[in-house]
Image 1 (cartoon, rainbow, N blue to C red):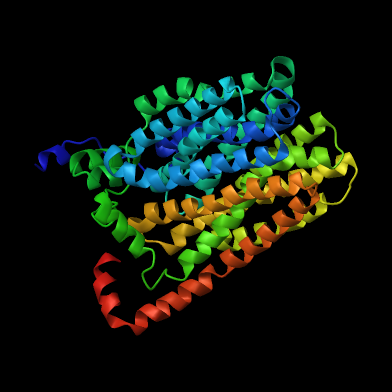
Image 2 (image 1 turned 30 degrees about the vertical axis):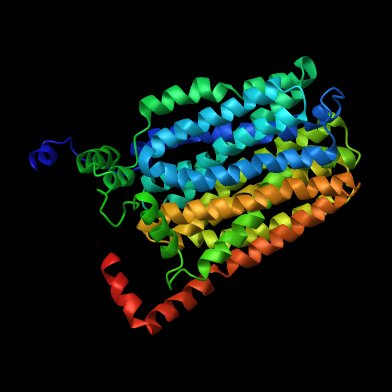
Length: 452
């Protein structure tokens, strides 16, 4: 039995170079995620001008929430399906699903079927992000988790910029439906590459009882061989145990704070991605300028993630996330003012630097709160609960737009930034209180001592 291990290929060093294939494939998947999420905001002004479709500001906001409601269900369901399908096949299913949703949108004769297509796309999008984040965090070199997460999430913004480019070029020339046909590309491009080249998670392989395969993947990519503690528990009982573990004494107070920070961050991300062009158009900017703001804020997001990843590896993800949330709130309040076009572009770009990476650093902060065996469940619930913010954001701005109060949307974004800052800043204090609670109750400490 040991001969299979002794004859295995030599272990690779655990560096960025050895795990680059995993990062690159997840980067491609999240690129298409970002493209699909931003497509709707990029073409919404054209869709509102299409009298045959029958889209109004109220229904536009509702459909934006259908997308994110699909994401909520997808995020919470993906973890359970991963137990028996594995992360690789779930990633393939997620990409296929949001490509199908884009095809439905492209052929939809009215808002009903269009909304159904966005919901289907949301189911796929919701599962993809936590799966890619968990994969990249598992394969990331030691002490480089925040930087690797930041690099992964740049792809979301490159995808957003691609969607904006399609909204600026393809939508005026050929119509908004062709932009959604472009959203079918992930199934053609990414799915074959994921099936052929992406390895399965060693922790998931071990949970499925495939010890030799788990060790082989770990050796190939320079990872430590997984232990039973690092493997996610399988089955419904395992999922319930994983959720209970998030509320063990050491993390019981930090967990709801991470959820609140994620709620605030995703309200910002999806509220801005869905409504920024239309909000800027309502503020008096031209159609092309209004759509271009979406590209500029995503470009800022790329710069911000590269800065935030390095800053978080040095100063801590919690501290960086809190500061970034505050600066996002300041940017949102500035955008409420009527500024010259050039100044507005600069403010949008700088706000993008902080807005998106504030949320990503919430994900990176889960590494400081949860043990290896809890990481996938913790991250899944932080993203899943956060999706309720993604549902509320587009809907709430849609309600404000219907009543002619788009400018209040910027105030809403500022408040969300301040709530996110307070929530994430309190996480270290919550962990200290949790540790003191744990030391005051000897029985739980004894029970968990063997796991640490």
